[in-house]
Image (cartoon, helix red, strand yellow):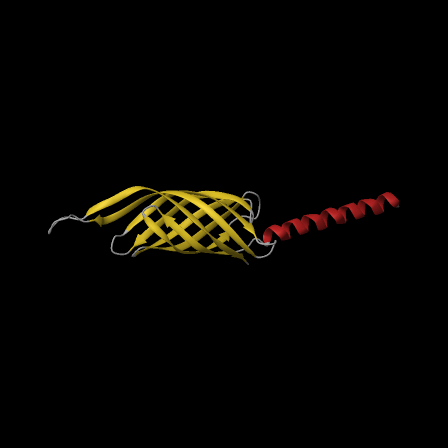
Amino acid sequence: MTASLRSTALSAALTLGAASAQSSTASDGPTVWGGISSEVLILPTLYGALSLPLTTTSPQVSVRGGVQYLAGEVAFGADLLLGSGPRGLYGGPSGALIVGTSPGWMAGALLGYRNTLSGGRWGYFVEGKARYLFLKGAVTGHYAGATPEDLSFVSPGLGFGLTYRF
């Protein structure tokens, strides 16, 4: 009888432990990101995004969509974030389409760190990125009738701000 009781208690403890581990991972839901982001030659500007987890196992995979204002242009971006959840390092491929007077695109990668504030829903992030930037007709000549030239270069950038996890 005692062995049966121990077996039942062990089974219940393992079941509850597994359930609590799943619920803590599953609580890593949608996250709102807001802060300051920059690209080379462009002053830091406002950045906002929403990320959704695609997996609940480690490594966690999330997709993040965001908007960044780039001195007269607006960049609509998407990032695939590979990391360990709401705390720790993350990174992955990054891309954006730029709309405005000089449309273009960016493609590259980012690496960042995020953490929670006092273990709650609020948190912070800091990230670095290296993306290839292309802008159509962004460079104009110095004389009348000059044909605008395309601009392309590797654009390192930094971003930091706050997160709120639902």
